[in-house]
Length: 340
Ligand code: SF4
Image 1 (cartoon, protein in one colour):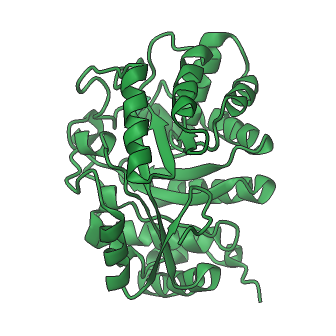
Image 2 (tube, rainbow, N blue to C red):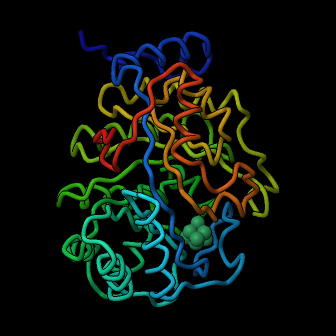
Image 3 (cartoon, helix red, strand yellow):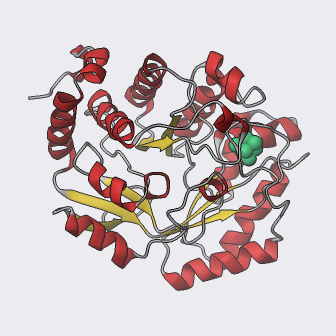
């Protein structure tokens, strides 16, 4: 029988955490069973130079680097040698970067491999390239797809509420722009992830509204592959002066509530080991999560904001973490097809 989790009062879920945890674990089991997935991927951040000034960002201008296409090519070659099925490519907003700049990145990857999955460019980057090129975001997405883009990270979502966005990232695209670009991507067959960065100045109401908005988009487009709650990292950024991030308990509650409110529309809820640390991410597998994300190989964004969990977990380590949680590890691709 299909359970209608929308009939539940979301605020009851917040105030009765132990019942929420139990229900989230039951729904996880119903949705995906005992398999826990991970992807063998490599992150490539091509620049930290950025025209924006998001208050939670510790990455912007931290080193002032911009990779050449040759450096990117080498990173893709290393990813191939390592057996990665995906490269995840994102960067700061370079002044004036237009669609041709982003196309040159896709072409560089495709010169190395026709088949590696390119998971790249947030809605903010799509907005930036379209604005700099005098074309619509829909046009930009169609061009990117033609040039080999396979899927997009649903980052830059932060909290999808313009009051919060004004406070934490006033120059970032607005809620309506994020939703529009995501729907445009889904419409032309570019799947995306969905994210939420929580643990700063938002309330539970705004978190819940965000998750329900993601659910409504999924009901319309079916284009999200997963939901990834991202716990705010507070070091080396302005927002960290007034907010210290969520507690571990709250991290688990966000994951559990996301599982419940997204059930059964979004099957996959990720526990990010970079943000939570491997042990809390492992624990989250009993609180609604069914995926541990990727091997990453390199990670710059959370590290610059104080994350200490490292930049790389090998497939062997990820399998071990999952097995020790008494679950079944399986390697997946970006679109959640099991590869084992
Ligand atoms: S979060 Fe992204 S857009 Fe915002 S300042 Fe950092 S790099 Fe720039």
